[in-house]
Amino acid sequence: MNVKFFSRANCGLCVEGLHTLRLVQEDIDFDIEMIDIEEDESIHEKYMLMIPVVEKDGQVVQYGNLDYATLMEHLCSE
Image: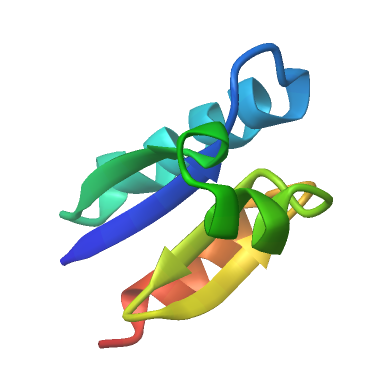
């Protein structure tokens, strides 16, 4: 399974969110694709007020304050 993590440099909430996502990754096998929203104008426009954003299969799983329980629930359901 591939999970996309949208963030940008100098984003404290993104650092915390990635840490939470990596905790979930310890319990579920998936790859994290890191995407810097500042490298693509359309992605930047779409997610600039939402980051960090976790996306699975083209659907936003969670954004902003990421929490273990919500991520685990959505990423476990295959």
